Image 1 (tube, rainbow, N blue to C red):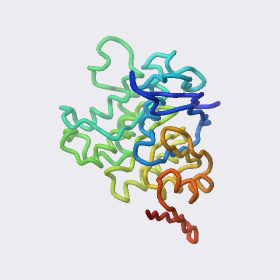
Image 2 (tube, one colour; image 1 turned 90 degrees about the vertical axis):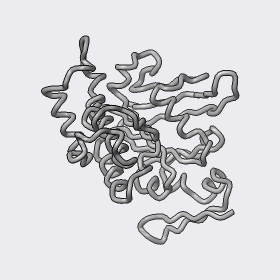
Image 3 (cartoon, helix red, strand yellow; image 1 turned 135 degrees about the vertical axis):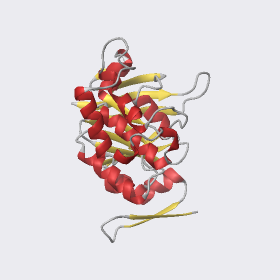
Image 4 (cartoon, rainbow, N blue to C red; image 1 turned 180 degrees about the vertical axis):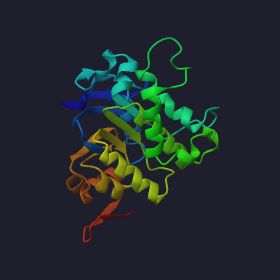
Length: 257
């Protein structure tokens, strides 16, 4: 089954021109896709369409074969989780309480959001905290954590949703090299459909099975990283001269005006 599908999707702000135009692609279940492109190419806007923040001006976004705007927000959240770049720092909640919010789409009844998770919910929350190496930080106020620590908390919250699709906007921002590699290895090992924007092309080439490159709100290239992350495509996407050294195990990218 296709996990996420966009068919002829365009979007722009009310009264303004299209920021994204004629976007079509389908992501099979279990595939890992990176979205790359210059600043302003439309990467974050594309993710907002996928995780149901923006409704398309034209076209259709489907989640697990269904129009995402014809299902309820809680139902969508049981299938798709999003990890965004910006996290509020003024929450009067601990890291554990933030992670626990990921269980809300699965809980029923009046007051479910106010009660303390127990049983299976508590076990899922504890497992996510352990998996993201947050045990020592679990009772710290969220606002006191570093940017990288907050990012790991938000990934743990997404994991507690037990989604089939996880969408991440620059997930390696604020992370040191060790945690970058650990996070990407974790995401690859989840068996989920993963769609992530990445500005680091080396990480994209190593992490993703498929890379979609945007330029000016349109799809410039879409396919395996060895074909999409080529010199001609990158030169066009970033408006610079691009060089790729493939002599080692990992491609090395360089750019010149």
